[in-house]
Image (cartoon, rainbow, N blue to C red):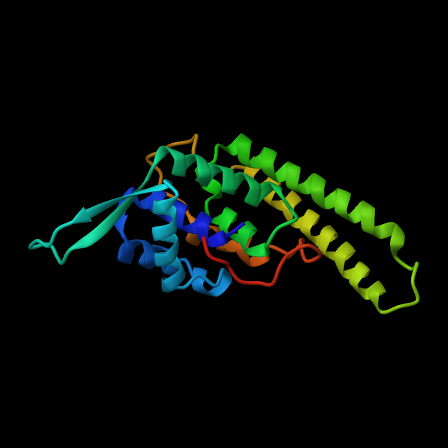
Length: 215
């Protein structure tokens, strides 16, 4: 699963309708080039691929006094459904790339509060199951791979601790969620820096190499 795909769909969704340069600027302003390895080339490639897949609708805009010719993009109904599917998996699943969680945190406030808490509780359950499956094997080998098992247990424990903290913050009213006052300022990736900065990497055992792949 690609963090770039989730980020581009979410970026277009937050802007409503925008051209590629606006979408690129929005995503890069969140620092996604640093924590998700998203670069301008991958953004433009994703825009074209998502349009081909029917998740975005492209509009050719002719040259005018407002500027040169360009292509504007907006989310289709299918694209909106795909955005929420990816967001749901990013927040609830442990066995995926770490940048998916980080991208998911950027769009946390696109969900109703109860839904976000429910997904994080699912994540917590997976982390606890992961620890329970690995912990019995600690000390079973006289081999340096024991350190890997120890790392997995530590990652599961710290991941669970962080997830419990985020659940508690949401239960305490942190962030303006999708089912709340829509007159409040929008909170996207840049507003979740605290949670992104403290998020562990609980899926080390099953993740691929860091960095976002194409759409």
